[in-house]
Image 1 (cartoon, helix red, strand yellow):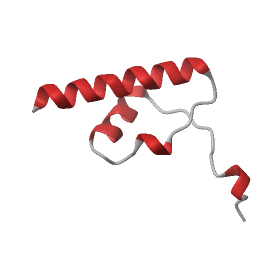
Image 2: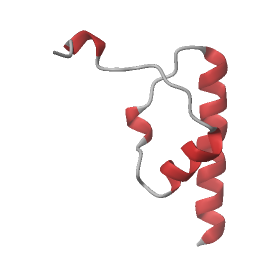
Image 3: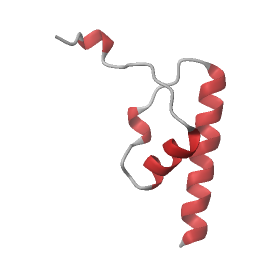
Length: 58
């Protein structure tokens, strides 16, 4: 049984794989949480790069 207090798990994923999942709408940013400030900064940068890529593709 999964505890409702522990609805998240820690994992590692390659940034290019994460970018692909976000770009193809297979993973939503609302579903992600960062456990440290360095990861949060990398995630913000990745999101901005994905957004810029989507804007330039249109």
